[in-house]
Image 1 (cartoon, rainbow, N blue to C red):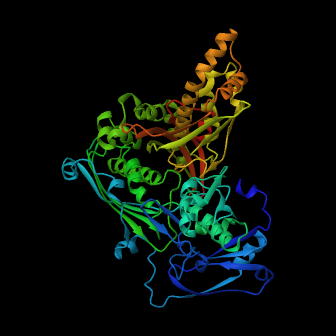
Image 2 (image 1 turned 30 degrees about the vertical axis):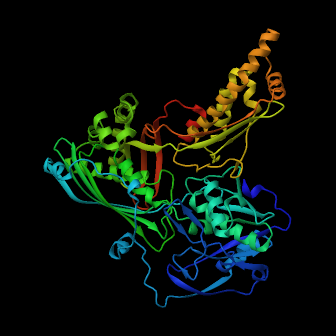
Image 3 (image 1 turned 60 degrees about the vertical axis):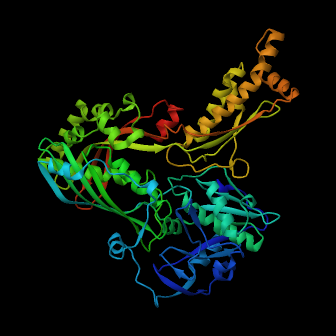
Length: 615
């Protein structure tokens, strides 16, 4: 991990000083007199950004940027005001806590903090048309077919923190000719390279970002990792010394942003037998101060909401700009909220009818036809639609029914603790992205592999190693021993370009496909040499002899592929369902998850042990 890298010579340490005011002029920064404040070497602020650079801490393709420093106005509580630099991480932490920041709110509007505030002030971000979800069917016709209507339901969802084990961290080392190397715990090395270069005002090829592994991401090592990388880079560039930062948990939690709070108001029409005919949703999403990845959230929310056949679906979505830390992608961003909103509506309908909730769920799971109507090309072929089988396996099982009866009995005899059991289906739409891969065979027959993806603990490198051995297996008599010859090397933005980002649940399969294509090229180059050796000797050619002969024949032993998905198969849907049983203490609100059973259709698993661990 980044923080395990031994400190380079003359290394300095940084800590963020963050605003405690949501919208204010920063008048001055001073330090209380203390041992820690005496250890401050300097404070890095917006004025230390090089000429030609710009005050940028994150940004994503055409969606917009977020400032690295709140200068001259702090726009949210938790915004970086400056970076305290000290000889040790401990002194940097302590000194940052001794900072006294003087604010003024003169001539500034009051902060916009909530979805309601934003709607009142028309404070919104725009979702580009190509990212916007689409309505389905005729909502008026659907409502007119309904026997019953619920016209004013509401669901409110708050935020959530990532809680990765390793907090945000980076190490920046200045190099010759205005170059810099940044070791970063990140899901998107390529974007860090671009943002650091823009911040420093240097070409992209002057910035090298290296990521060996990440101690937990869940989206939090995406756009949020760029701020700490830029902070270290600006300090290292100015001081011409290595600078590293490792956030303490409190600072990380205050600055991280987290999941998007949402407020959904809905009206739903349905028949007496529980069949849904129409749904209209007014959805407010609190995006925080900058666009970040928020323009992707509406489509993801609606995609997971669409796990049920609503008959017709219409919505009005407001992406709210507020004076809070920018919200970002958190583990199934938007999908989690969409799924929760869908379940709240289903429960409301079942309650209104006095019907069994699972019966209402089951009745409104998609047919193959309605799935295509709601999801388009992502629906895929009919045999791949496995959700009904998965749901029935759980909800219709005798065990589920007996557990549901046991819950009823428990609740009848318990006053202060109550139990509930629920079966929830999931559709999770994913998109494949172009991904690079490179396979190189060295003189001793060992193999070095590079991929665009980053190892986050999801087992990416394990799958990539296996795919390399699989792709070259026909060239090696000892195919089992081939796996031990493979090493996957760290992500490096100058060694393998266009690495994209690791997220969205498709990095392993696309990285493996790029590696498989690279192996196919090597196979085609080496197969004639293998055939020639075996024709002469009459025996299987050892791997070492094959590589030695190929070297003698000046065969290129390195192959690079840039895999691109088939335009007809860019998106597909994952299906799953879960039964969870919980107990709630009605006096304290303490919740205990008694048991969860999960069923997930993973298609053809690249590694069942790794995938089971992920589930």
